[in-house]
Length: 144
Image (cartoon, rainbow, N blue to C red; front, side, top):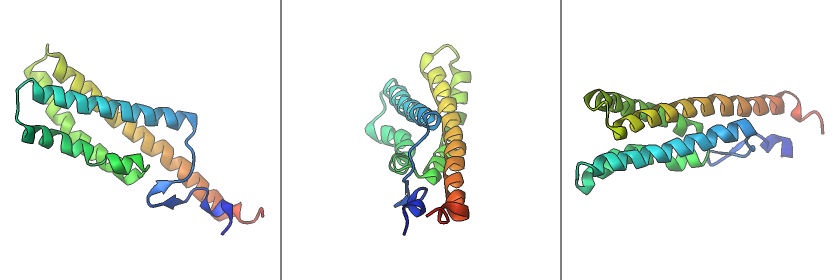
């Protein structure tokens, strides 16, 4: 197998291609907004003095996809987008219920930011990986 054959390949769901600076910036924004949303959810549950099972219920859907996203698995990012939509609905309800409270407003901003960064990452990274895959299948093997 030539080195061109593995340029855009995956090993265990992890891509082997380095990210461009733009994609790296979107990746960092995705993780920053994700961690921020987790912290906001903790703050929201803590302000009501909820027991630990509530903390687990609020954070588990967000944390569930972290290993897949860390391995650069685009399907995990897509599923994260679906889960983020549920947090968006809840955040909108909270903002209407408490429009002056900063915790619900910050949650809404972070959910929108996370969803937008995730969609942008899927689009940009998917194009990058498809481009390399099509280059390898069309002419990468002929150069050697």
